Image (cartoon, rainbow, N blue to C red; front, side, top):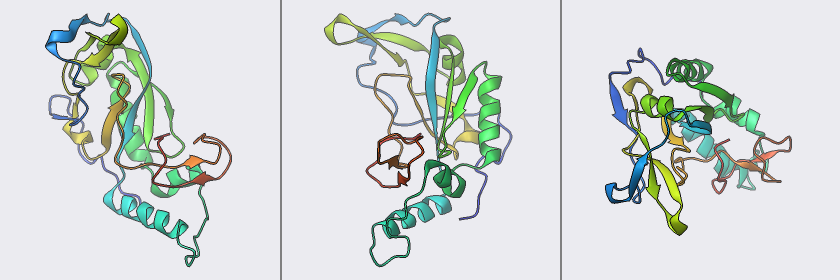
Length: 204
């Protein structure tokens, strides 16, 4: 499928949309133990990126072909880098999202080889501000507090077609609607061929 940019309008931080389905039940007012320290560093957070419908359809078709003995693509696995080149986010979208993150006072740590996630970090205050929420501590199991946003994260509306969710703001991992695949050794960024299957559980 031809590459299609999903960020097509100017990013206006005053116009936001909610990232649905990312709240956690235990982050309730009754369990609230106060704000996370503003200066607390957060690392290895991730933005999970969407594919265009065309690229997602092409990716799903390839997955089916790789499992079909009659297909010329049967068991012709791709590396994460190959998946990224053929089905991942465009460079223009990655640049636009990265520029927005940096403009919020955050830093970009890496782009996944599959081009389906951007790893980033920053202070708790800057992360909360970037996603239109506050990070709080909530009472958890075994008297340990757990971090979570006090509301569903929000991103600029201009990014809504390109961003599926944010991973790492709470202990509950956000699972994107699609998976990229994993290597035979389980390391998606390794050098061995990637098995691009629906059963994979990593967005890297």
